[in-house]
Image 1 (cartoon, rainbow, N blue to C red):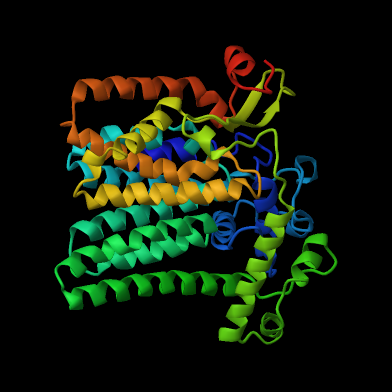
Image 2 (cartoon, rainbow, N blue to C red; image 1 turned 90 degrees about the vertical axis):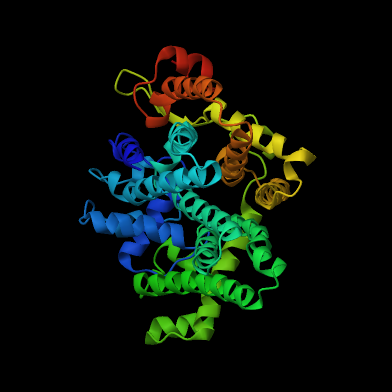
Length: 441
């Protein structure tokens, strides 16, 4: 986590312009600063955390939030001069560091080796695709942290007694869904958390696990609702395009709450209906093709790199985008392929659970691929599950050090080559001109 913090917090304002979907999340941050009720193409938790990080930093306390939040999306040219982009990027960087720690704990749980967990942590720390996403005001850092928390809790619950791990699984799973709904496919892991108690016919333990998981999920949902209530006491601004769109989605029960300030179950249901309506409308309006889009099959081998933006105004090329560390992504694929072997699954509930979760997430992404354009970062959940399976295979092989060090060297070499591109620093001509489509050195 300390290494991740050094990587993620360093010069967060290097790119002084919106990066990719920051064009949406900066405007939502503005409306949260104003206290305006709003809806978006995803559930609200991730966007609230981005806004909360900026509020806590105080870096943009004098920003013209009304101007920034008037539209659903904002162009670089429309951003006010002097805006501090590090502010909204602080919370993602923090959750990225937390995610790195959770990843290391997963590796430790699966290998029972401190040095192996440290070496395997390079799969997270040296992945330039993860690096660029958690250093921007986007949703991936939050979902990664909650997803990794859910995976770790599931591993602990399968191997140990007690209610705490099922509680953490329920809380992390619901929190991940409240960042992006696609995380719901991790719910396929839930029956495996109940298996140890069911097999032993320990009904009190089984009831305890079910109750703990349900309470954890409910707690995450209620805390998110409470945060939304606290951050959105005002109605949308009808004088702005974004406000007009949000007003059209407010249910009558929710509208009464805005007037009276008194929440109840009906208002909470109305809020959920508004969120679902915006997500449904945005899904229907999202294009099915994009030159920067890719397909689930491409991601298995790290294909689908995205150039977010490039700038030569300073006289040198500064480019930033999403480029995976190829060795890291192939290690994840190795974990999946080896887990398909019957000998690996026989009697191994943990590996079966991880493989089923990987398959469920890929099936959902394949379904979505027929409805809308998808991008490389949509693969992050299956990527993490593949790494977990790769760790199990490495342990099965006896944790061979020589081969692992060779792979680690290759991981670091790829990371070093792509480092400038991931951070938006001066991009070498050889990299910009040959390895990055659309970037001309």
